Length: 402
Image 1 (cartoon, rainbow, N blue to C red):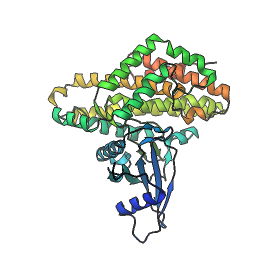
Image 2: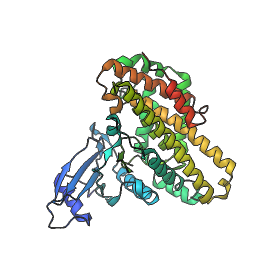
Image 3: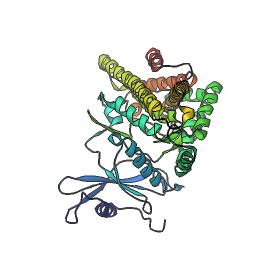
Image 4: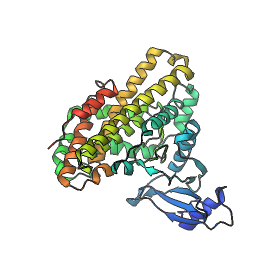
């Protein structure tokens, strides 16, 4: 870290000018910090012609806590290399990295400001017909081409080692699989749902299934994951979506990335009960979300199957019976991790606008109870829900708690 220093706006401007073909020495560059991330500094650098790029720098501590929570800045390398790798495999739906400086833990990337953050757009009731099909393409290609279906044993083990990310994985392990299921000081629980949170802490059947999901997270390096595919990490428009923020990337279970996105679509579904007073508008938005959930899984499974059939390099995995078994396992994993996402976003440290922006407190509590009940059912029934239609049917028939 001898060359490392924390950027000011001037530092971000100089970094962008030094490494961007889009800017000239004669440009009048303006740099502004924006965003409310917990781990990084993010600047938008813009010239007088309106051309802009993003500079992102990893801080050596958790910004939300301070220097008492130190973090490795190697996560910037992880993020840059995951985005570069995923960008080669699916450039249409991965933010473009233009330069990475390991000493400064800084990344220069394209500015997606012309697009919307998916979470904010869904809270506002917007719909994007191509979202699920495009994200299915992103997930299928990035996960298949970094898996054992393509890489030989030596390649795969080298990749697993290259993308070890112990500090950020530990954050996920704690926030996803540990904290919500005990009375942990990091939890952020609204008083109205404290009885339901306490039920989680004493639900032996649920905790056993969460332990199985956590064990897989720790020990099933199937593919190079983005590691944090939530609706705040996706930029969208009517015609395009792109994924950002891959600093939690590592080799893990394929279902974790797929399930994280499914879970976020279901969080939006749960929030609609409190965000939208007009019943017909709310039902139409929820129907859209269920349609996107079905399209996401069906598109992912179809594309992944096609890739397995045509591009598998390891002969041991060429069996069609094995490939069908593999995909069924991924679905079960995805459903389980979706359930974990619902629960941890409701009683854990990091909440989401889908629920937090509900102004009516009793209605917010009802939506949170729905999210907890749905999350529990998904985790416990993940092996019985053998099709995405069965998952959607469960969602539709789950009553909104009092």
